[in-house]
Image (cartoon, rainbow, N blue to C red; front, side, top):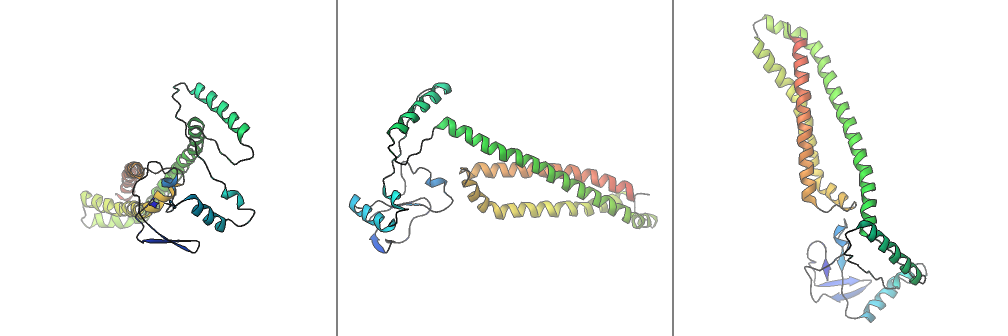
Length: 251
């Protein structure tokens, strides 16, 4: 038996009510197909012989609707050494037509690298564009909300700061109080957002597997880069807000 996650801890396995002894667990297989890109645990079980497999399958697929699953599924991989993409596509079209002729009502699927790459680019490109639009919209909304909130608070706090300056608070102390006050408003949302992303990272990593993204190290680097860019923009807004706030409260 082979599993895509951790080792199976038991020495036996029950399939459809039958108890099977696990003779050996395989830690590595040459080609597991799309199993490693699955968000759930997957297992490959190698039976004693074909007769045992067919007996188990007949018990699992008893109805007419599921009888088609009893037929064996074959996967053929072709490594085409053609550097010209147009020639590769022409060869694939011809090969696909030949498969269609010999299918004889058998279920089959055909897929080539070039067409798959183009479909993935279209699919991911749409999400990328949508992510950019939503990211810019939310960033602008957050910036405007925080900016005008600080401006309104600055107008309310003006009288109190004027009184403090009259009783002896100098300009440096006023700036320090303003910066510490505004810093808290900016730091807490940013810190909690990063904390939420950190806790949600395992779940996001599993969700990205559904899109065929299994390189979680790359996803971690991209997340850190986005957090850094967002922090820099946040800091710029903080500086602008602190400057406007100080102009409002100074005498």
